[in-house]
Length: 229
Image 1 (cartoon, rainbow, N blue to C red):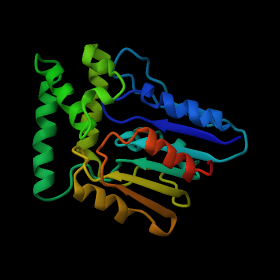
Image 2: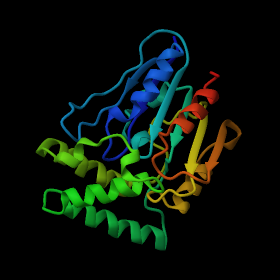
Image 3: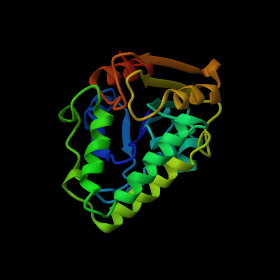
Image 4: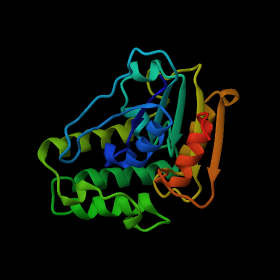
């Protein structure tokens, strides 16, 4: 039985994959997904079944760094959507991002929180409008446990430096990047490719897309790459 484990990024939740889950399940895949529980949804760790078959990880942005090491170790294929090794690279771009992350962290739990989250999600959606993304429950407010997890993962964004622990060196990899990504800077996109074994990596650069690479067109691309028409 072929299996997928999906991982959303910072300020996301597992509902972002609903269309993806329907399509993969229609092709006979077993689907499971990480839920960090930033909003009202309970946190959930996914798991592989012990059935034989392919094991595919699909991760958006920070999602690859949120998965348990034991999940990654057993994957034989990985799809990275708008991913990175170091979100905050060295140099001027990194200094600007570090300042921005510090400002976002200071907004959490204050009257600035909702505006900060809306601005972040708007940049995620760009060049499309925010309305093009699935409804995000965080815009309705955070409870203390969800806010704490959001704060912890914001710190993780600052600390990421390399491929996550448990990275499956023998896995086939698909990297999808958007030229108009307003979240992950070009230096970070380049560093990700440099860290990978390019002999086992397919790279797709989409000039008209931004950070939120969970669009129907990208879904079609990933399905084709995973061996389905």
